[in-house]
Amino acid sequence: MKTLSFLLAALLASATLAQDIPYREYEPFERYEPLVSGDLTLSGTYQYWKDPANLDYRLAGNPDENWKLNWKFMDPPFNQAVHGGHFAVDRGERLFKQLDVYGNFASCLSERTGSQQNLRAGYPRWRADLGHVAGLEEVIEHCGAKQGRVLQNGSYDNSAISLYLASLGNGQPINIDVSAGPMKEAYDRGRRLFHTKAGAFNFACASCHTHNIGKRLRGNVITTIYGDAAHYPVYRTQYMLQSLQLRFAECNLDTRTQPLRPGSQPYTDLEVFVTALTNGYPISVPAERDW
Amino acid sequence: MRLLLAGLALLLATPVWCAEIPSDAGVSDGKTMAPQIIVNSGRLEWAPYKRDFTRWLTLSYQDRRATPEPTRFAMKLPLAGDKARGKALAWEWCITCHTLPGDEWPGNVGSPMVHYKQYKHADPLIFQQIFDPRIFNPNTVMPAFGTFGLLAEQDIRDLVAYLQSIE
Image (tube, rainbow over all chains, first blue to last red; front, side):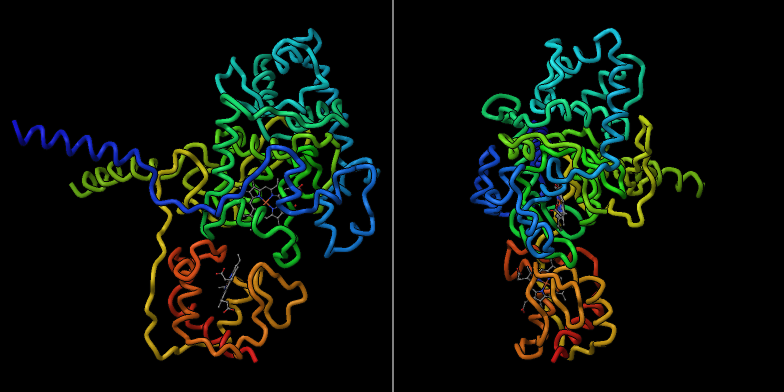
């Protein structure tokens, strides 16, 4: 009997041990404010790009300084060139109108309020029907599927609809509340993931976007993560249309880390964290990016 | 009988393999895939990536694999490194962060390597920095090239020989 209980105890111990997280390393944590002006203490570049209408184009013309503008010179109204992002907005509008003939696509996306203008600024958010926090692109896939339409998260058509909806909210500040409940939990998980080292090089997102902002990786200069969410999805010549979560996948691949699928919980948690750091910054789409 | 044994071994091996690669990773047939955007399509395609990363930790919550811990490596002298080969390796692995002589796009995440010879560091010390710099600085961003299996012992000896030769 004694041996039996000993065996049982050993089994239980090994079971709980298996629950423990194996050895992990984290970049040193920083204090982040879930508000775009928090960048003042992170990279200090906020002063240069906080006012989209008044960017100093001389900084943009200097490759050693344009990181201070955090790509905002590639956003409207500064960048007035017609590029692939504009075609994507048009395509997104057509697809949206096809799907919304009876108004049920919009009511699905907005959980019945019917408002389309406020969608980009308010996502990711808790979705009771899904039982978790979801990004706008995941919800576009979900609401399309209800009508038998395939709009996979990260696909061109999905991002085009997302970009069209973002364009309706142009000028509106991003505004997600991460102060309590499931949104706070997602934010905290995302912040931890941002600092978790992974992959062949043992890099965390923070290895670059927190601790080496403004430094050069040969031809690439690293920018702050604050303010990014307000211009996604972006047009890229190489990737056509890139959602925020596909940008995570690209950074993962670039740093020899196996990427995850868009819509996966870790990427959505990262999106909540990154979006919260854009709170208060106005949506400006369609934006363009280098290569 | 032999086939049966091989089958059994496979059966036993599969669950381990599945448990390692998380299901939310962009992997198919055990290989790293990259997302491909198809214009005017509602589908996201995935194509095999030029490199495979499935053996290293991902950001998935299902990933139960451990990060390789900081490791010491006592390099035995003499160095016996080939500096020409070391230079080629440095241009492949180190140049993104460190400025090397002759680079027009100098990286500055790491310290500059021009005139490196002047520091007169001991070979085993530089070897350890490349093998696993976490021994000196647990918060370093420099990868642990030896511990993570990216470079072999001779590769690192060649890199040390190259760095020690930079006038």
